[in-house]
Amino acid sequence: MTTRTPLMAGNWKMNLNHLEAIAHTQKLAFALADKDYEAVEVAVLPPFTDLRSVQTLVEHDKLKIKYGAQDISVHDGGAYTGEISGPMLAKLRCTYVAIGHSERRQYHGETDELVNAKVKAAFKNGITPIMCVGEELEVRDAGNHVTHTLAQVEGGLKGIPAEQAETIVIAYEPVWAIGTGKVCGAEDAQEVCAAIRGKIAELYSQEVADKVRIQYGGSVKSGNVAEIMGQADIDGALVGGASLDADEFVKIVRFRDQ
Ligand SMILES: O=C(CO)COP(=O)(O)O
Image 1 (cartoon, protein in one colour):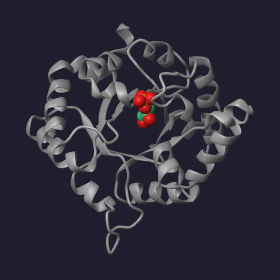
Image 2: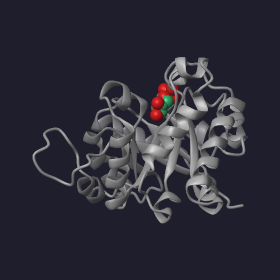
Image 3: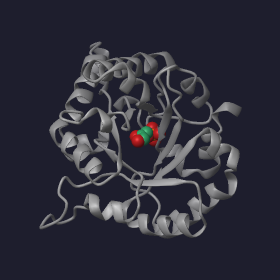
Image 4: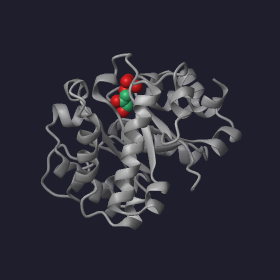
């Protein structure tokens, strides 16, 4: 069994301008110590307009915080107004990019096919995808949450070779738990995360499945993170609202102390 380093990532969504981003990242860096980074990988996913500022701060001050984007274009360049390409994100030395977040699926009509194309664009540019999956409330109420989520996993990974698949991060984010304060019970989250790992084993191999990090996302806070992280197949959290409060995010990184 491989030991997977937990990944705590803050998805800032459309919050914090570039000046606020600098102040917030500095606050995180000031609070986090070497022992935190030894135990947990810490990342922030700011809006595109903040990335250059965050990069400059991280590189200048040699911070151990990783950063990434919230979306990526399927195209490498050209006449695609408003899009941001993989080469642009790679030039900013983004480690991660969130792909297929439920807010993008819901408000921008992103399909599994598009998510798959974006996963390919990320890998092509040397950026690790954090591929988001998860069911809406009606799907859970109907008891189809596992089937629904596994179909998203399979669709998103289509044509991705094992060497790339083993490095991906998958974030299980039940839509009904996002920003609602309704956290998915730790055992319910584990059920789906274990099924995701099983699907990866089926698509690739157990060895690949053991390497993939699976995060939980949806109303994660310092008060519930320890129980979630106590589950065998949960390797981190994708944190929305609580990541905008530096003290709270630091507590989440230190989930072992909660
Ligand atoms: O969507 C999320 C992270 O990507 C979760 O958001 P909240 O933590 O605000 O529920």
